[in-house]
Structure formats: C-alpha cells, structure tokens
Image: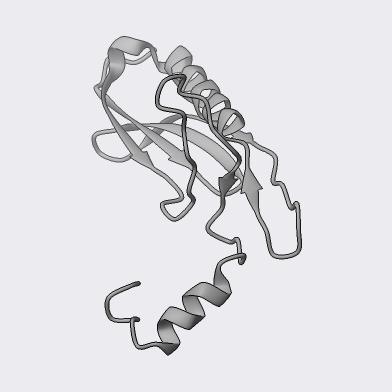
Length: 124
C-alpha cells in the first residue's frame, strides 16, 4: 500500500492489456499484464473477442488496485488500439461480433479505391 496519490494507466494493446500505477513524478509502483487471444479467421483478417478484451483489462486493473489500494488512485488514464473497431449491442452491452483489429486487411481494396479516386485528403 502507498499513501502517495497515484495515476492508474490502463493500456489496452494489440496483444495484451496492461495496468500500471504511477506516482505523480512518473515512477511505477505496480504493474499487471494479461495477454488475450488473436483470431485469424481468413487470410489478412485479424480479430479480437470484445468480452476477452474487457475481462483482461478489468483483471489487470483489479490486480494493480489490489497492490496499491483503491484510496491511492487519484486518476485514471486510458490508451487503446484506436483503429480497432467493435460494435456493442446498446441494450445488452454485449459485442455483436468480434472486433476488427487495426492490422486487418479486409477493407484494403476499398481504401485503395478511395485513394485512387482522390479522396485521400478527406479520408485518413
């Protein structure tokens, strides 16, 4: 346990979720990491299970908070994959399908056609 105020950083990456508690001066006080499954259902396709992402991130956050104490956490910062896309059911909160990961190439032909048509400045 610590009495210093900490920032809980949640990092949801491409292959794992991490949580790190930092002091206000940037020193790490606790770290947890959990990998999750990569799915490759077709050539060039990369997907993640939204429930598995959530559970892995929740697990790492709980591990770090257990180490430093909930009262020590003054703020939470979040970083994620950004371009990865997942659709959730509004009523249930459940994912409708697997996330399409930023590495996925299934729309490459569409984006190439937009670029070739001169739309690159408007769509990045």
